[in-house]
Length: 274
Ligand SMILES: O=P(O)(O)OC[C@@H](O)[C@@H](O)c1c[nH]c2ccccc12
Image (tube, rainbow, N blue to C red; front, side, top):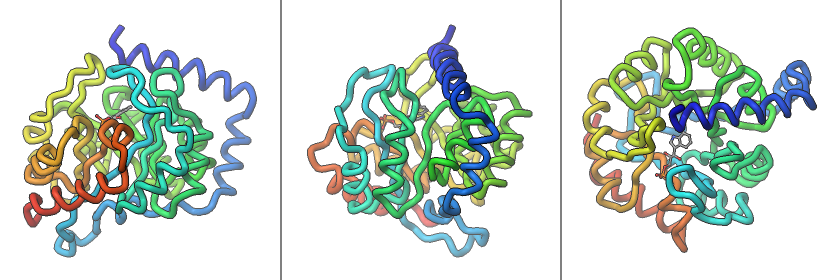
């Protein structure tokens, strides 16, 4: 079993436990009651009119306590306080890991962050069931993660459609050329190139430069993982990223606010006009 399969098995078990307490019908009703989703596509620089794009490199800042590849990263006693720092530093979106077993996250973290910031919030989890999409909306998420490697074409398309129906956007994550093609075919508007292979956990930042040119200019392109330095941010910016998604480097830094601001400056300087 790959790491991804193993994580998903745990996600399904935890989902079963939540569903036994709160039915799909109840979660749908809660989603319908939630305040409308914020426009994450626009927040990430996406425009229906390509010409009106600006030049800024956006940062999606992640609340991440631990990971299967690195183990414990940071305690994060107050995710709300960390998210507020990210927002003050200029982050465009906050990503909140809600997977519990491997990443130490929860829906309570999502609630706390949602209440603390104005910018769009991404529910970062391994989406394998429509229940999780309604649940994300019920908890105020504006964006959900859809990992292409975890879904077949039919599920990917139907989850993307449901996400849009609920007024949210999806960050559709790919790691290979084939997965990029599948994401595009499903109609993804925000495409993440994860340079970490979720089956082996190997990180290779060069993956971004190889795959980004395959993504048409109408889509927002997000470089995910492996940001350890300003130089790496500049490389992603130069290679065509509209946004970067950063976890470890921010949660481990003593001054996450300043680090977000530095990353935005470095990436924007490096970014070519699209
Ligand atoms: O901590 P990093 O290397 O900055 O990575 C952040 C983010 O890209 C990573 O957490 C991630 C990317 N895709 C995922 C899918 C599930 C869980 C986590 C992830």
